[in-house]
Length: 192
Image (tube, rainbow, N blue to C red; front, side, top):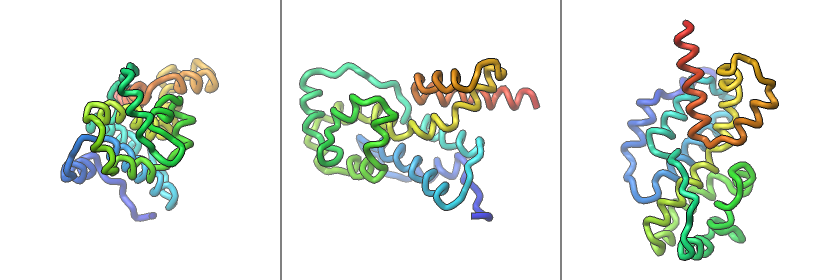
């Protein structure tokens, strides 16, 4: 891993654009990006902030951080209860959990299997697309939480204790955490 060079945004982008996109591709992109990061870390590669920002830009570019629509109709809820992510865990049950505990219940392989499931075709496309936003939030939550704390502390000029900043980042959505990281990077480049 000592000779490994983290791919640029353009390299990732070129690869992702070659995929055949379909109704739930956002879920595969989000799961795949986080899986790549985890595999690199397992092999001893330490991401730096620039690498993390590249991954965040990809999440943003491929709309994996769209605002969730928390309003579900009764028929959508019934349909989601019929969709299983894995045995004893319905899509409805998973989405009802906060992102952090939900992320502990399933693996990236579970997400990939779900995204590629042929059974999804039985359900309305609009429902599957609507479910992708909270699932992408769950998939990427750990990654965004790990990278947003230090930038928030920097943006606040170290005036709040880390514990307070930690509570703040835990209340924010991933899109907000990404914006914190980008704002801190802009501030850092302006100072230089």
